[in-house]
Length: 405
Image 1: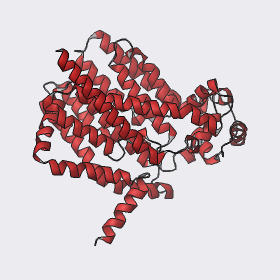
Image 2: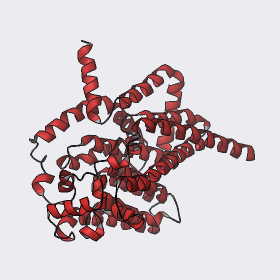
Image 3: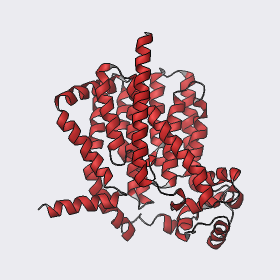
Image 4: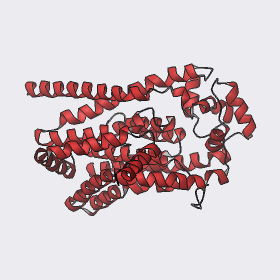
């Protein structure tokens, strides 16, 4: 027994070091100054200047440590946070791999490799994506881990509120992840009263926090003009303050917010076409998860678990409401893909029978088709390597197809 524990510990250390080194190496080409992020200059706007406004929680936290929100201060505050996120991510992936039994080891290693190589999946861990997206991914990973802790799981309502205070898109990107996990835990705990109360508490917080932060513009923000906001922001930072970012981030201008609603705006069309091109070539990821959830549906012995399986099957559709208020669809895609991987890893950690069976069968297929497995990993790694956001990737692939005719 001691030998087995030591072996698992050695495997855990080996995998964590390898994954962490890999993540650090991947990060070097993207070692962008965090202060160059389009959202960085907005950190100087906080609760003291705007009132109970949405999206200012991180600026307010930073204000505890710094009075000035310059490039140096922003880098000092966020660089350690994201480096810890890399360490934490490598720890969790290594933990999942090392806990696997022999018959599941090869399959879960392949899924982990696909996660690390695949387009969009790992994007929120790296500097290419915007600051709010990376912070929401970090908060979501922490929240998922808390659910598994008997002592700390009641911090989840605070995590949900904190995430919504970071950015309202959490409601349609990572909140569905928590909803399905809470539904699963409800069944896992045999619908006990204590678990049902935990479920209802968090669902209530989800609904209330969504309503609050989506309508906080109109109720709780100080009545400041656009010009006043620009002045406040510029006075507390040495970064260039972008007026369009302030306009889209804080002001309740419905014409601006819903420019895509009629599906005719040039920005919407310009963003949708590259997104659809990229979506087609990353569709195998969705098909893989769809097969897993379909298997879960067939294996489910209760109506509740069949309903749960259907929720997972349609998971990629939960981001659709955000298409009405965004033109940066790669951000939505990244959150959706990452969420599906997180659900899969979560269910594997919880030893869900359907997921374990899929992993075991996948391992057998990998032994039989090793070359194909390597080709799949290379395909996704290459597609992400050419990705600066969605546009260069789709342009590259389009040029490749045209030139090969």
